[in-house]
Image (tube, rainbow, N blue to C red):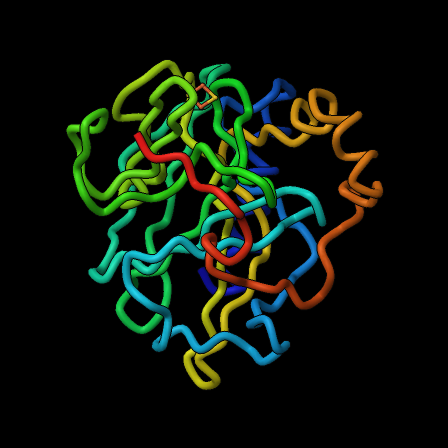
Length: 231
Ligand code: FES
């Protein structure tokens, strides 16, 4: 989504929330400070060079909140209507990049907030079916087997998750081929995340609630995380 479109979308959403004097039924896009996506050396990521079907991770919109960046290898169209757990509706705008194949989602499971740490991850994207996942090409949380479709706004396909993963809104600059994160859409879980993991995050040095830096490092999940649980 281009920035102008994004701002227009936010303005329309805000207007719908206030015109009637009652809260809107829609889950509006939420802008956060823009963050360029860069590699581990600090060089801007090239969208057209993003590997297909690999788990890439970065932290946005806070320094401690992980997200998946995925190149699904095929154009990803906008979703049909999605619903948050509290029944707010929204429509996700689809993939970005040269082929419209690049998507990003919060990596905090919408069920009980499992997320990738440096030690272990129960949640990741799987292109293959497995013993516990009859769907291929899903984000699968092995904690209780919630499965999300990254090609459909992270809609819940199976398991106990009550809502899709929150989408991370991306911008692609067609001239430079660079990517940036600019906001979220859908049911954010950040407040619950910070409350549940307050002790752990403080033992890790604090700073998890700080806004993401203007340049967010993207890396392979297998390099970020020592052990990935497969199921
Ligand atoms: S925490 Fe992910 S399925 Fe329960």
